[in-house]
Amino acid sequence: MLKGKSINIKKICCIGAGYVGGPTMAVMAHKCSNLEFTVLDINEDKINKWNNNDLDQLPIFEPGLKEIIKSVRGKNLFFSTEINKVISESDMIFISVNTPTKIKGFGAGYAIDLKWVETSARRVAKYASNHTIVVEKSTLPVKTAEVIKEILKCESDKIITSKKSFSVLSNPEFLSEGTAINDLIDPDRVLIGGEDELSINCLKNIYKIWVDESKILTTNLWSSELSKLTANAFLAQRISSINSISAICEATGAQIKQVSEAIGYDSRIGDKFLAAGPGFGGSCFKKDILNLVYLANFYGLNEVADYWEQVIKLNNWQIKRISKFVVEKLFGTVSLKKIVILGFAFKANTNDTRESPAISIVKDLLENGAQVVIHDPKVNYLQIKKDLNTDNEHKIYTPDFGSWQFSRDIYKSLKNADAAIIITEWPEYRNLNWEKISQLMRNPAWLFDTRAITDPEEIQKTNLNYWSIGNG
Ligand code: UDX
Ligand code: ADP
Image 1 (tube, rainbow, N blue to C red):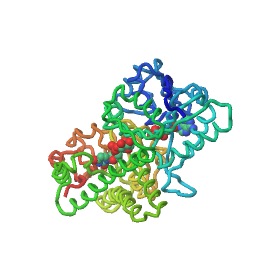
Image 2: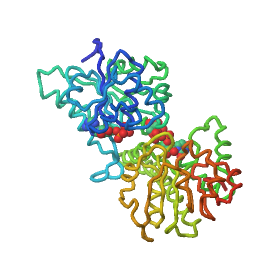
Image 3: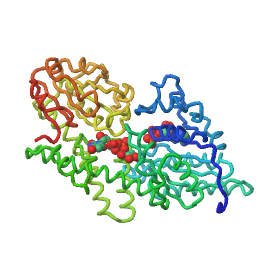
Image 4: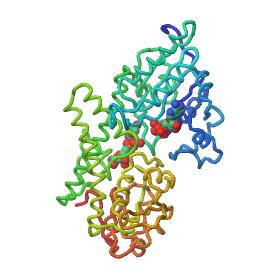
C-alpha cells in the first residue's frame, strides 16, 4: 500500500518509561536532534521522576544516563502521561512495556503475559492518526507482532473512511543494564524485522544517523523476534555452563578463573560471559528461556524444550547451593546469626533487582532464622522490602524466622557480623579493607564471595574463614 511513497517521520513516542524505554529514547533523542521524542507511561510517579530537576531522582540508575537526560530533556525529549494525545501526534510508536512471565492461566510459569502489550496496541489502534509505524521493543514471544497487527487492523477496519494505517516492526533491544548507554550508542548490531520495506527503511534511516549501516540487519518479523530469545538463551546458557563447572572446581581443587581464562583463549569460545557467579538474574534471561521452552513444547519439540529448561534448572540450583553452603559452614545453623549481604542488585551498576539471586538467598537465610543486614549502593529500601515481600524489618526476631535491615554503610553493617556474602560485583566491594573488617566481625567469621572479586591472598592475611566461588 505504501510502495513508492516516502514516510516523513517527525515525532516518535515510546509507550513504557522503564529500563528499556527511558534510556533508548534518551540516546535516540541525543543522536537525532531533528526528531522529537516522548516517553509515555501510565505510572505518574515514574514520569514525575523522569521529569525531576534533581537528576539523582531518575527512576533508574544507569551510568551516563543523567548526563544524556540533562542534554536533551525539554529540548527534543519529553516524558509524559498524556498517552492518547501523544499517540495521536506520533509517526512512529515504540512499545516497551512490561512483558513478565504469566503467573496464572494457560501457559503459567512459561508464556509471557501479553496483557500490557495488548492494552498498548489497543490504545495505539484507537488514537493513532494517518500512517503509523509501530515498533515492538520489548522482549516478546515469536508471533507477537501478528497479535499487534491483528489488533491494529481491527481498529482501522472499523472506520471505513479513516486514513489510519499501520506497519509493525520488530526491533529487539540488546542493551545490557549497567552498560545500556554505551550499548545504545555503539551497538554490536541493530536488528529490524518487518515486511514493509518502506517502514523498515524509515527506522533504518534513524539508526543510520549514528550506527554504521553494516551493523543494521534486516530480517522477517519472526526471525527478529526469535533472534532476541535465542541471543538471551545462548548468553544464559554460557553462564549456567560456567556455573556448573564452578561446582566441579570446588569439588576437585581446580580454579574457575583459570579454567575460564584457558577456554576463553579459544577464539571459537571467546572470553566474555565466563564469570562464574551466584546465578544469573535480570528481567530477560529467565523469562526468555521460559518462553523458548513454551514455544518448543507448543510445537511438540519436547526434547528442545527440555534442553533449554535445563539452563534454568542449573541456575536455580546454583542460587540454592549458595544459601545451603552458607548455612552448612556456619555450623548448620544461622539462627540468630548476623549475616551481611553485600549487593542486592542482580548485577553491578544498576538499581534493578528483578530476578536477583540475592532475593532468593536472603529469603532462604530468613527462613533459617538469620538476622540479615542488606547493603547495596543503589537499590533502595522500599524495593528490597517489595522483593522480600515481608514487613518484618526491625521486628524483634524469633529464632524460627529471621529479620532484615537495610544499610548504606558497609563497615557499620559488618560490625559483629558472623558472615558477609558478596552477591553483586559492585566496584565498592573490590577494594574493601578486609583486615579492618575482620577486626569488626565476630570471631570466627566468614566471607563468602559468590563473584570471586576478592583477592584470596589479601583475605588469607586476615583471620576470616573464606570461600570464593569455583575456588577449589
Ligand atoms: C541481558 C542481555 O545481555 C541483553 O543483551 C538483553 O537485551 C537483556 O538481557 P542484562 O540482563 O541487563 O542483559 O544483563 P547481563 O549483563 O546479560 O547479565 C545477566 C545476568 O548474568 C546477571 O545476573 C549477571 O551477573 C550474570 N552474569 C553475566 C554472570 O553471572 N556471569 C557473566 O559472565 C555474565
Ligand atoms: P523494561 O525493563 O522492559 O523496560 P519496565 O518494567 O522497566 O520494563 O518498564 C515497563 C514500563 O511500562 C513500566 O514503567 C510500566 O508502568 C509501563 N507500562 C505498562 N503498561 C503500560 C501502558 N499500557 N501504557 C503506558 N505505559 C505502560
